[in-house]
Amino acid sequence: MTEIVNEINDDYSTSRDGVVPLSQRRSLYHFTALWVTMAAGITYLFLGFSYHDAGWSLGRAILAGVIGAVCYLAYALPAAYLGSTTGQTHALLTRSIFGKLGSGLLSVVLILIAAGWTAFAFNVLANLYDGLFGWGHIVAITIVLALIGIVNNIFGFTGITAFARYLVAPLMILWIGYLVIKGATDMPGAVWSGPSSPDQLSLLAGVGLAIGSVMWGNEPDIWRYGRPRFSWPLLPYTIALFVGLVLFVAAGWMMGYLSGTSALDFGGAFRYTVEYSLFGALWLGAILATALQVAINDGNYYEMINAGQNLAGHARGWKRWYTCLVMAALTALLAWWFPHLEEDFFTVAGWSAIALPSATVVMCVDQFLLPRVTGVRRSVERIPSWRAAGLANWPAIVSVVVAMLFGAWGLQLLPGQTSAPDLGLVPVEAWLLAGLLYLGLASLAARTPARAELLGYSATEGTPG
Image (tube, rainbow, N blue to C red):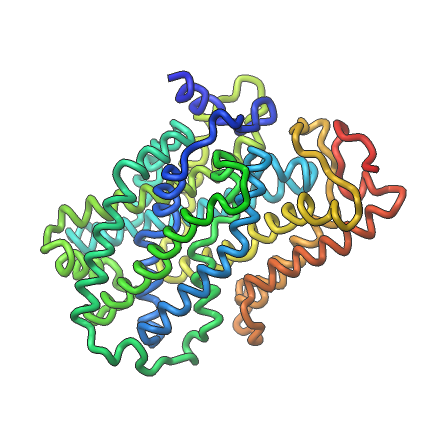
């Protein structure tokens, strides 16, 4: 009971009490179940439909998912290690590493991207209700879901892991396993390697879409409750990525093929899926879809709340559940603002693939690589107050901004942009650009007399030596 009260009030999300002690770290099963719900679900079913709409073969769709999973894993292991070794949220780490200015900006970016994903996921759920029962009122239902979907997060990390462990993950794996096996028996062999239409969506663009779908960017938020060993998350990650980017993508493609519908009519396509795999029990399909979308949005809300706590949690008398209410209201606003399903998916997935992971890569370079190159180590064990935090880590901010602009240009996300050259695997290139640029700029800054100001060291650290 004491643990629940603590997580309702704070959940180790403010500078007053922001490091998860080793005694509160959770088991490997916690993370396997939780990550299955965060890296699989209806969103990835939608991704499979999108690959089918692009004219891809089933084999090509699975290949894109596998490559996307490998790329994500290369990023996610050090990102998780950053969280487990520090015990801190992504947002609190940015205060130590990026300074006041960078931390404030990144917290806002994190909130907006997570709110966009949450609004999209509940919009999908509202469309599924419409497809199953013909309810209509998509935007109104999405807004209501956004307001009530915050409930599990009021209870902090324990709230979201309990829902994942005891209900959603086992249910999800059983259903998707049956669906894929049944679909594979009904598929003609030609669909695995049939002709594709790369003019509509190239393989690398499809891989980028897979990365954006599975990308969180705030992995320290979750893995700060894990054991501080680099390879410890490998098994949960592998299981979750297989379920999400292989099984769910394959299932989505199969349902697109068998139903003859597209992602634009995802509600109708899901009705076919329920009739195909759940014996036509529409009520069971609604329960399953609701559980999956609430579970994945638990992760979205969790990162929003932690970022909001970084911004406001230090205020006198402020409670974590106040932040929960603010984030639910913001998500409802975004749900009203952009209700277009497929367009929103590509936009949110694109920004998700480049923005926060670029910042996380910079933090990993700062903590794990820069000390080896320059001999200068930034201490993050003591979380600085906003007053004590440095103004800005200018090399870090510049590196992330450049990486985001490059990624946005390569993924055609800039306002008014209608085309972009073929730049390859843009998200991965953006991460590498952020990390290498920061390593170079920070190494130069560390050799100047003004290194403490340029690198945004807090007043609690003194001058780096």
